[in-house]
Amino acid sequence: QVQLVEYGGGLVQAGDSLTLSCTASGRAFRNAAMGWFRQAPGKEREFVAAISWSGGSPRYRDSVKGRFTISRDNAGTTLYLQMNSLKREDTAVYLCASKNTFLVPVTRGEYDYWGQGTQVTVSS
Image (cartoon, rainbow, N blue to C red; front, side, top):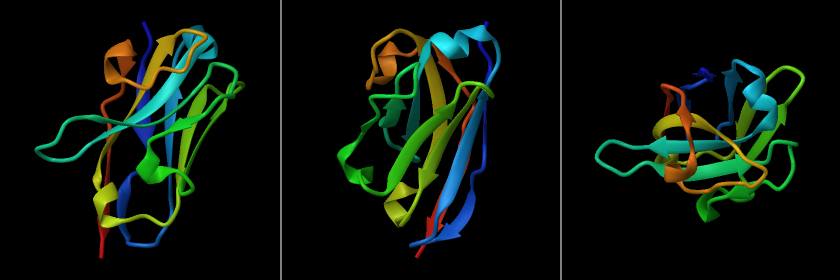
């Protein structure tokens, strides 16, 4: 069983930066692609970023390219999302997810395990 726990959310102003972390239990992390998703009130959960089991092949949704960076520390079993130049439309609950695969999934249906999420609120 894989357990994922997100940290680092909060209230920030537009233009600020924030780094989210997701810790994962179990050796499954080292063989798993990891992703970040977000869900705003009344909206569907949407893909944000994903990274391969080895830390390569990052994928991003268009609206965060150039502002967000996904990375992972395989030794420490931690996934990160560095978010810069935050905008009001980035406000959402951010969730991390994992999938044992050598691919880099970008749809929520492909992921097997999910964290509970951390709230990010960006004020103008």
